[in-house]
Image (tube, rainbow, N blue to C red):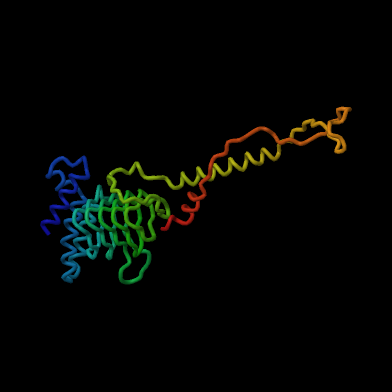
Amino acid sequence: MLSTFVADFRIIFERDPAARNWLEVLFCYPGLQALMLHRLAHWLHIIHIPLIPRLISYIARFLTGVEIHPGATIGQGVFIDHGMGVVIGETAIVGNYSLIYQGVTLGGTGKECGKRHPTVGENVVVGAGAKVLGNIEIGNNVRIGAGSVVLRNVPADCTVVGVPGRILYRSGVRVNPLEHGSLPDAEAQVIRALVDRIEQLEQKIEQLQQPQQKVLVPFVNSSLSTPHTSNSHILKDEPSSQTHTYCLLQNKVIEEFLDGSGI
């Protein structure tokens, strides 16, 4: 218990540049306070003490704005930043050294019994307002973008954004968990691809609507080896010499967006 508290305490200084001294962190960080109260409630819940664990959870919610069911399993070194509006369900599991921002929900999708909440791996970052719902598994080192809604399993070392959440990035390289500005924008990529396709189709239509240029070509009699002496000419169609530069369209971008890139 003591080692877990120390890990919870130290991780705040590592991940929050606003943390300046231990008194400030101890008394002014609701995420740390919520975790301390939860660990007590969870221990009482494990030994089957009635009512008291839920009462401690309710008091923690009132004081910190963080609601964690006593049955939830929270690893060491977890940092709940700001904390207001965070909800963690009864059967949820959060791995070591995960980072959870305000407004996050680790919830269920129905009234089924048994395991009905997410299992979050280690070193996972869940952005502000993200919703991770159902009995799904989030792999280690996953980053979930702010406002995303994740409803299916996510492999390790991925970035997930959007509604519903889509995998946009796979890499074995660990990234700074605080670098939210580097998250890709799936919708912008797909819209850009669709705009490129529209521009290409409009240019092709414009080409087809342009009248073909007529040019004079000398008439050659099939029985003679030289052009006709009367300098007769025939009209021959020649396509316009105007050329267009088309935007290249990556159909894979749209296909991956529509099928959720595996999510």
